[in-house]
Length: 155
Image 1 (cartoon, rainbow, N blue to C red):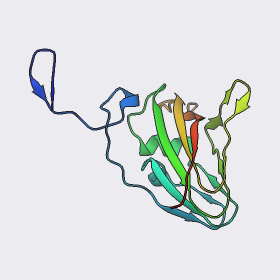
Image 2 (image 1 turned 60 degrees about the vertical axis):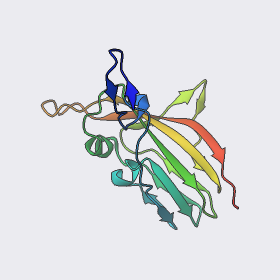
Image 3 (image 1 turned 90 degrees about the vertical axis):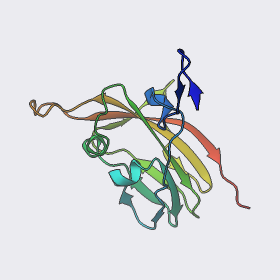
């Protein structure tokens, strides 16, 4: 419970702060096991927290920009969507971009999309273009950034 500038009590809202909203959100992890190359679904991505059991060295391809935009209605150009992948499996997983997604360079370096075992990574998708249904020449597009990595340990 907080008090606003006119002294009225208010209840904090839940949601992602990086989109200008509240600071807390409720997540349900999307647990995934990979044994062969596969494509991530938009439904898995929008869960935001993805514990990954990678059993063989595999490539996991992101959904297309159009699929992501459809799963996150209301996104506008400049909006950021963050998600985390934690590889607790026995093998390395490589995250691959799909149609409409660009792996962005920072200071000449592309985001490292290969995750060794027991590594967690936080990524950001920034919407750079939005499809206009009345103009078929437009399409959804995102830039992918690697924000951070961390080592996960076993007990």
